[in-house]
Length: 89
Image (cartoon, rainbow, N blue to C red; front, side, top):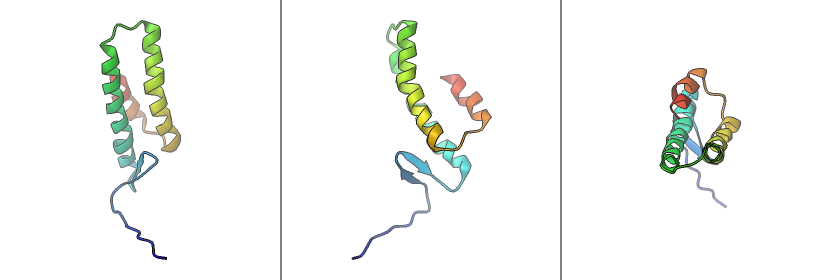
């Protein structure tokens, strides 16, 4: 039995996470991609006239769940990441 195995020099995707040799690329490839999708989702919901409770529910359902998965799988991003990117949500 033969197996065809390919070797990649670039990032490898496993369970929705892109893994690389460089730790800085982990944040750029995974967190920034997820944040841009999250911002687009929140813009769509921002058009609607929601109560504060409704807005809270949307952020919990779409936002926090997406980021928690990354926090569980990847190492913690630098503090500067939070200041720069999460403040704009």
